[in-house]
Picture (spheres, helix red, strand yellow):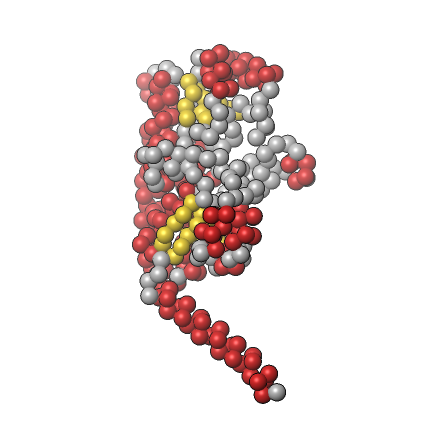
Length: 322
């Protein structure tokens, strides 16, 4: 009888001891193990976490983030993680849930201290209205809004804030350092955005067509005019009839620039380019899409360079040269 009465007390003491041990291990300087869905999130996490974190991104920068094979090796990474960061808004709906379920790590599940939804508080574009079930039938429609928000550097500051909050939950003793790193990141983003906007200002309003609807946030920040898509609906391959319509529209509007991400086939886009005389430019959708894109800052430098090169190749004259 005495043993039965003491079991709750023994259990409580064990929990306290284990908590103390865990707290000491963190306080001793163990690095926070972060797993992210995309390399862009890992890049930002490294900027904010600095020497206190290690990062692993599941998707590669040259992969389509909508479709990633949920390998068992990723589950093992998640089992050992202290923090998990995802884009959210259903972007990873086909592969993140099975990985989290297989990992069985309660520290990184939604609602836990180690879980970060990078989309929290992000001003979203293209939030659809209507019945979600019907919207699904319209193709690769994201019912919460377009999820490619990381392609706007200023929204990247909000991503960084969400990651900062997560780091403070997991390792509060380093809050001051995380806060300092966040301030440095914000300043670097502001300086970079102003510099790149100035470079592109002379091309403001240039009409561009894209293969897939990945670029509305990038378009909004850098002020070109994204007028249409080669896909008739997100994720739906274009039919011959639609291609004829796209070619006709491009000729009528004198659209001379097309953009595509590296993970899409260029066959259709090259056909359209041949019929219209437009220049096809491959922009990077994520950090790591090309070997030289090693950081979140590199991503925007690369894309603006490529965009301007494409406009020059297409013979688009800057406004200040007219």
